[in-house]
Amino acid sequence: MIHISETLMVQTVEDFLAADELAQLNKIMDIELRSAAWPPARQAEVLPAPVDAEDILQVATARALPAVRRAMPSVRAAAAWGFTELGEGQKVPTHLDGIPAPAASPRRIGRIGVTIGDAEQGGLFYIETTSSPLPWTGALVGESEGYVPGTPLTRCLSHQAAAVREHAEEAGWLEAAPTSRWTAHAPAGVAVAYGAHLIHGVTPVVRGRVRKFVTDLTD
Image 1 (cartoon, helix red, strand yellow):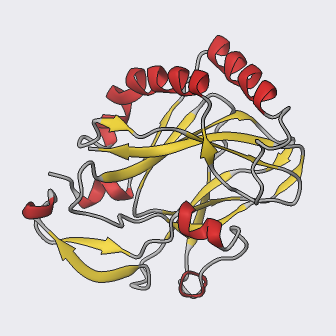
Image 2: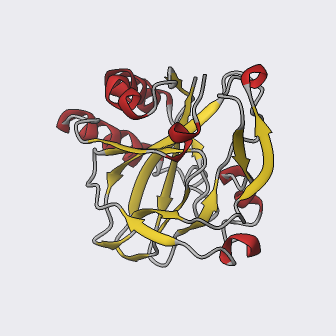
C-alpha cells in the first residue's frame, strides 16, 4: 500500500544517465527541434518524447528503480516520458501535481525529471514545503484505493491543467500558502524523483536554455 511519506519524498539518482546516453539524447533533440512544428508552443509545455529518446529513458529508469524505491517503495514503473524546453525569461510556475485519480491503476506516486541541458544561469528545479492546510483537500483514502488507511490528498494542479493557462501564473490558493523553498542544484544527467504531493517548479531562466525530460512514477 502507498504511504503518505512516499508522496512527500525527494530522491536523487546521480548516475541516472551515462555520458553517452546524455550525448545521444541531446543529439536526438537537436534533430527533433530542427522541425519548426516540434518545439513547445507554450512556456513549460510538455511534449511526448521521441521514440528513440523514450527507449533510452526507459532503460535508465529501470536501472534507477532500486535507488528510487529506497525512498518510494511502492514505485514499480514510469509512464511515458515527456520533453520540455525553457528559454530566457521562461519558468515553470509553482504548482502541485497531486493525485487526480487515487483509485485508478496505475496510481501516480510521484514524478521524476532529468535535465539533458542546463541553462548558464537560472532554470533550477525547486520544491516548497509548508505546514499550511491550504494545499490539502480534507479528503482521505484507504485500503480500497491502495493506500494506507487515512491517507490525505492534496489539491491537483498538474502540468496538463496548467498548460491550459500556458503555465503563466501560480494558483491563488497556492500563492496564499506560506512556504519554504528548497532549490536543487542537480546537473545534467542527474534525476530528481519527487512525490506527487510536493509543491514544486523551475526558476526563471536568466541566460541560456534548459532541456528537460519528465514523467510519472507509478505503482
